[in-house]
Image (cartoon, rainbow, N blue to C red):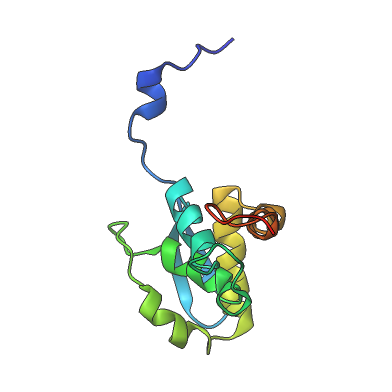
Length: 131
């Protein structure tokens, strides 16, 4: 039986998991797993300031995941949100290859993303009175 985690072991910094992904048209890309903060920022980018879903922004969820996970050989991010405009022009097979690898490495499922969108759609936004 394994030893139970302590507060110290839970809060200790751990390196992110990384993986190299072969893409059909972009060569080999190195990705890292998403942190909870990364996922929250991606989900927050899909909502308006009042907390309602922004369907236009949610179209870029997969691309935001790519921006948050593609790293160089030193595990430093190499893309920014400003690159999303260019990423929209990529072949879908490249986006799919990288996105699916990020999701698998990070334990993110389609249900995770759908649940986040549903949660942002239920009830009034925080601080907003119900009608």
